[in-house]
Length: 87
Image (cartoon, rainbow, N blue to C red):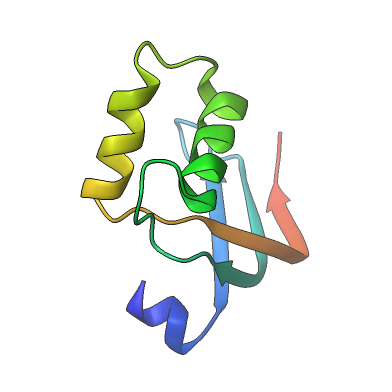
């Protein structure tokens, strides 16, 4: 995260298993604060991100505690450009 704090430009790259098809999203990132408490707004946002990606967690209290213990944060990418190659 130190690099993104210094320079917020970032790319998100996704490819097919064979590597022939890919997409790249470029833009700038905003970093949230680090999760400091299981009930803080950052942890709430991490829960929402998890729900959108993977659905419900079997133990939200455990998840929230892990986010604080791991000092997790949210990286928000504002996309300015997308490019890639498809088949």
